[in-house]
Length: 463
Image (cartoon, rainbow, N blue to C red; front, side, top):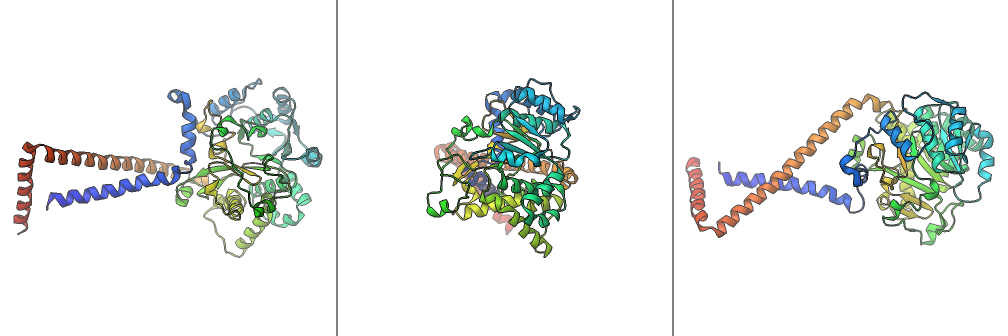
């Protein structure tokens, strides 16, 4: 068999693979980076040589130490193995760290009064859902302290499962038949956050988040201003007419802040990482003025989804996927996609940060980064997520499979790198041989004789 055709075939295979590899990132770097990679770059900064990679978990002691230092807390350090704090103990901590903040235990009795005290814009209320309002695990206590510290003058309203049910029955009674049939407390909490932000507005956040910049500064964080500013795309009359009743002129502060959780190169890649959307919007932290159309339309959207499920027209791949799609970031991203489509836009248009009407879409690192990418010199991240994942079932069952997947992907990346290296090495060697052939007669004659001998020998063997 001749060596030349074999060499040509090998070069062709390597060239095609190298072209595929080079084409992948190009499609994404035009407008945005994949969140995990971009957050990693942010985390390096001037201290990249000494940077430690911390575990992104509510059980990571390093996380608590970093948060304590970053927030400049004066009270004793809280660690994952610390004893839970009672409501009174947490009040005592806030009296030292954030004396202007009110921690509200009986939220149902005070939410109307607190909302009415706000003139316009996003009311200074932070809503949190939890199992027990009288005892706070370390990650929940640290989360509440961080939000209080960075948002002076706000009220933090605590809601347990009974409060959530009572709130929906009182303020959205038509939605209660659907909400009451949701199978888990997690799904009810998902639905409730849309309802309470529609009715009363404010900020909703999970109890495993850490606030590093107050909501009042989300328009002017230095890291955000270094990037292209969020632009208002609502120049047409149809855009302004579709704004909610709470939306002011576009020159005012946004009526809602929406964060992007992650961006993947394909839907398949998103599913491999337990996400449900290629570009997924997050709803573990939301800030909005009351009566925003996007939030107020969510109950009906969830009801429609449940109707399709009952007819057998929608199926899910597991418990976690069902929750994410039914009430979580899946259905929330669907609503945003439709909102943008009505304005002749898509989620690809807002990933880098953009103002669309009265909504400010924050660029990925604002909320998409987590504590594994923490850096004290990174001012672009407004809220970090500890990803406690206390509700997930499949996530725990599949943890070993996910680890194997990550190892396989890491091995594939190494193989791809070796293929690219081999391709360019062959190109370099081939170019060097061509130059020698053209410029060095002493090399040309013996090389020609060798090639002729190989070709003639191959023909003789074939005959």
